[in-house]
Image (cartoon, rainbow, N blue to C red; front, side):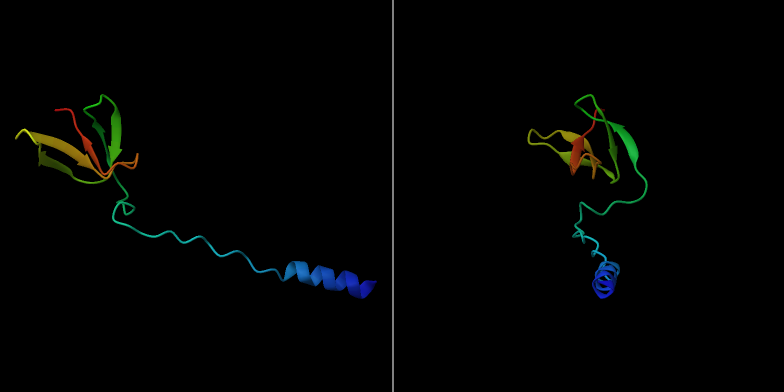
Length: 80
């Protein structure tokens, strides 16, 4: 009986810890440690890590956008 108890005790304490989950690192996943709040064209505040860029629209106008935002979107149009 003692041998069975000791075997059970040692088998529980020798269990290997689980390996940490590895996440792939993509370009969108990489973020700098600081960001900034912007006012989106939709009227909401968004927190973005990337640079602000000016992109051409289909009709020829230029649109100011923030990049790499916390909500997962890569580009958010900004209110001027």
